[in-house]
Length: 219
Image (cartoon, rainbow, N blue to C red; front, top):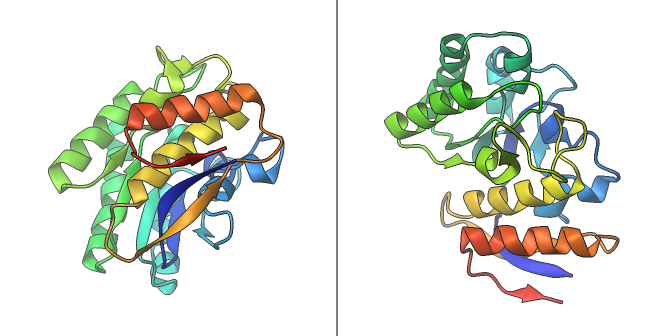
């Protein structure tokens, strides 16, 4: 079962945490990077459990060493759960943006996902304001995954990390977001694991419909 999307030819760098690494999925093929890049390598600098926006600042030189075609930034959950203030979070995000822009590296922001115990609204408001001010793309996984400020039933695994179905939703949003970064893209195939349930297939179909991607679904 496949859906065709545009994929960047050059490698991107992902900055994130355990969510962006795909923790709590039932298999590697359900992790959003495996869905978006089934046959290509992506440089995932997402750390283990606990990485915050301040950790991304420490990785600036490492980012540049890969000479990436773009950076995908999704941090904030561990800032939120460790009571980092929204202004401090925003300062760290802006530091990484400034570094990327100074080195002519496009950067795409991803919202902080919902959490069943913490409210990420203020953080995501900060990201929205930063993206608008800097003219950056902001991929809104927050709205796609939440009911209120918590995960929609079935899209969260443990209250903090997305489920298999949640990763499928994330993959659909991220694949759409990276497809417009420049003109160096080639048609590729985004694979949903063969073991995917009917519910997962419907989640992906609904997500794609809401995004109006205009892509061709093959069954």
